[in-house]
Length: 491
Image (cartoon, rainbow, N blue to C red; front, side, top):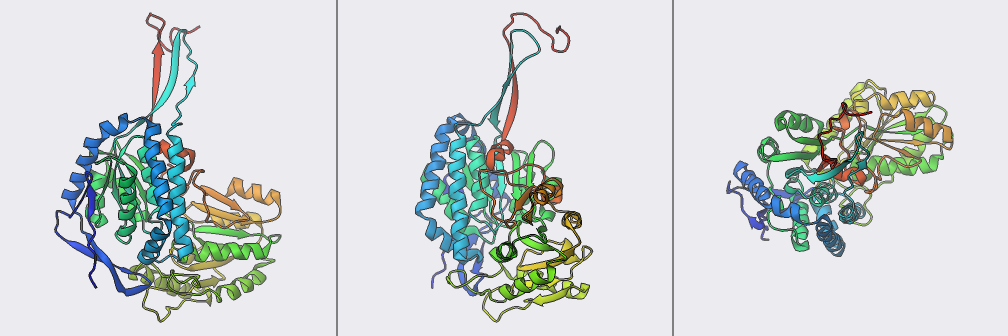
């Protein structure tokens, strides 16, 4: 069987890397299946992509935003037409079950439609002046060349979040996807090309983060870096970027679901299963900590173990599969390592924890109980199908436990008491809080982002999605015909 070779996209052309080298990617549910060969990009490729983006910027910024929006709307239509094909490619490339892969593509459709509409908004503000015959306002202007560095776990949705927002604001893009999901990135760029994005406006460079990513971040021509991925990589980006760049970081979390004694336990059970084991726990919003009121902990624990044991593991293309593989061997090794850490720390392994005898990188859905806040499985982001139960005395104790980590992306509480809900909303140190729903399920018309070590303060999608990728310029127009000095000539 011939293995296809894929190329990069620079200045409107599909090209090979200057390195002359390629790498291969296999199906994580069947590591005997080679998916393709991909360009091992290098610094020269990055420079070419940046130069192309810089050259295209002045023409692209002059296209009226509603016209830019028409291109994004066309992209959304093409994504919808190719949704099933893209979903199946995604499942083969990174492992998530087909239902979730369809949802990933749908999220990209939604965000392209959202940002197309933003082409008729991009609001500035008008306000009063303290001086006579003087007008004050703000306008939104593009930044220039921006870098979009994306992860493998949402290989179409997250690139769409970033790139659609960047384009509607009038920026040009150099896109560096995860090396684990290059096909999804290539297919998304093909759709943007077919939708009418001009040459040089979007450029795709595949290859390792240590060369492609680092060189892109360090470039003085890049005005902004939007990154989603591991905390350590985000910290390095902050060091490498230098002054004068906007840096947007989304760096994972250790997300809690609080279950109060008055909660609907069946509803909470469904939420925990979906939150903890959806995408095999490979979400930055995955529910990896379950904090349960002491009055219902034993009952809920029994319910959770029983339902988890019934989950079916396998290839995500099989409609019977509930939990797919991890993305690669390193991810599998990391999860197994944390399971051993949990056992050594004294947490009780209730179910799972083993590697099935399949030709893929699988780990059984795993539950620990009797977990305390000083344990690493309570503190560290595992990024796999592992969740840990901890007992809480009351609501305040539960909130304290939820906040006792360095992260702060997504949180959840199950309760029938409206007072409990609003107390949690106020005191949970997270960018997102769900009430009677799990920690996953964000919608694209609301801001997405975290607090503490989960992010750098900028939020993606929603009405804040364009704020990162634009500069709000303040404008004063004095039509008095004379010199007026603010703070001096008043009164």
